[in-house]
Length: 231
Image (cartoon, rainbow, N blue to C red; front, top):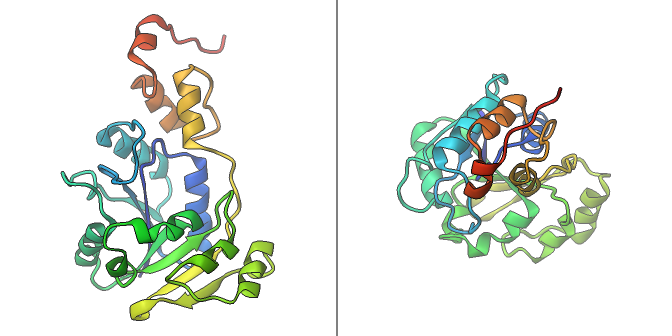
């Protein structure tokens, strides 16, 4: 099978994540998308919800899609969540399947700063997705890709549906434009902290979980705020 690997803090998971996953699954012909909430992200510094809470929210978000699965392998790891270690474990779990690691243009450009980047680009195939604020032409600066600039411009103009390039060690990177979804986990956390509505930004089950767990609300506000509903 062809498996898409979708890692992230999912703090919280929202409709933007889900729409991208479904669009990529369809466009790349993937059999499954595996969501992997991160444990202790080495390059993330913001305050994040506990691993158990992010796992619960992710499971609530994907439970109605039979093509979506979740693994807790990073959250169970006590050390920092390095992608190379995760991919080693995934290869043990899915020895006969082809893995496609999903990430945005910005993240692919940042790979030289990741743990053991030269090992990473030989471990898996990649699906490099468009991201707001970044262009495929930016990938001309990547040390791991050599793609003619006119072709990258076609991807940015969406006159080309996708392009697959070879990486070191025979791996591939498929560049894939996806529909932009203007939903931000940062904005959701901010709205939740201010007790503003987060309805229709994420699945109803996730919204209810955030409210019931008082997620993203300061301890001071938890004690003084009375939840108000529609009347």
